[in-house]
Length: 306
Image (cartoon, rainbow, N blue to C red; front, top):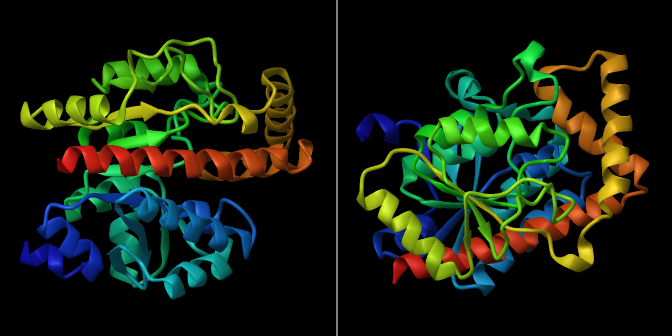
């Protein structure tokens, strides 16, 4: 543990909550640096933290700042990441040791947030949508590290499904191979980020935060390694029309292929392009689904602490 202390800073409030067995919810920081423009990114991040507090839990936004692994960052640090924006490295597992060694900044993706949360002992994490198997992955092998992390790190991830820019069928197959349970909160259909439907089924439907907490507690008690994916549909009033969003995604993917954009640049490019095509509607949907996930994650964290 001493080796870990060389690199890891857990905010005092988070540390105290964990020591006292109180609920804590981890949050990512890529949404701050790469998700939306300043100052909307900072306002959204602070609003998400407030929602978690309002629902009885302590928020722990994760990031790498000047080489330090942070679990729980201050308002000033959130503002710093928000202003620096795309100048912050979008950080997955492979990037962590390099940024730490070089004393640089990193915004945590789903994979990195799971790692940092796990190092600190935080078991629940709320995000927008996870990465997955990209369309055309049978030739490009473009598969998000988020899926690998879900297969081996013991953290529950509450999201609005996988981003519909992905190949959802292959993403579900990959999660099944990795032994990751995919649960639908009050739904039997996998939500697809901006929309409540995808045409794919989840493994199990769960209707209350307590059911979710019981399932994850059982997984941890049994020593079954890996995460659990809770998919929480975007609220009806903020959901986008299925065909509208799919057409926007297809147009954005065509443009991306034309420009030859690959790797970790693909998701930020596509989300921005979709926002432009939909006249900003997709950004509003994105913000609302994150709020919705934060609320559910806090409720599950509270149930787990009982």
